[in-house]
Length: 184
Image 1 (tube, rainbow, N blue to C red):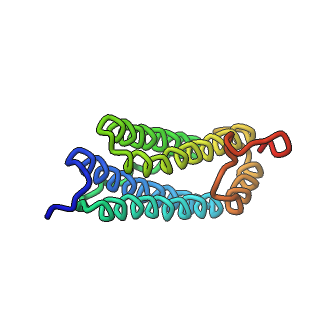
Image 2 (cartoon, rainbow, N blue to C red; image 1 turned 90 degrees about the vertical axis):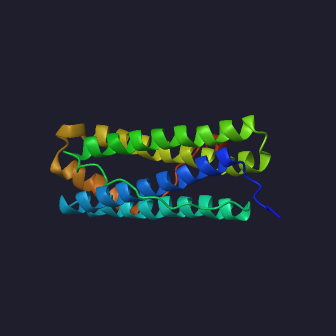
């Protein structure tokens, strides 16, 4: 008896997401190594933590595929991009990477909706919320770098930013959690 509750299309798109999450973990790992080589230990720590988070996302998708009776297919990932030229480029590339991942999550949601696969649709909603948070975190990084002086930031400003990121929480306040008493 076939117990696979996923269509071929859904199984394929979820397996593609497994690869995307593994790729994201590798990208963040490479950016962490780059940041460390430039003396940004706090920023490296931020990227290393987020590399682990991306692997956790990969595991969530893998577990879901298996729980629904599907087959997880592990594929090769591409080499991470070349090292950024500076912190501005690093954060901009990180943001673009998150936007691309959001698009991939929306593709899963749209396909699940079209196929009336409400279990997958519901499962993917966690990732929709997560991507809002991921994009917000990187937008905050870009804002903080801009305040520090952007590409022309002083060493002291970059030191303060590095220290902040080494201690910053791994989640961002979201609009859905805001209230009059707690706007952020």
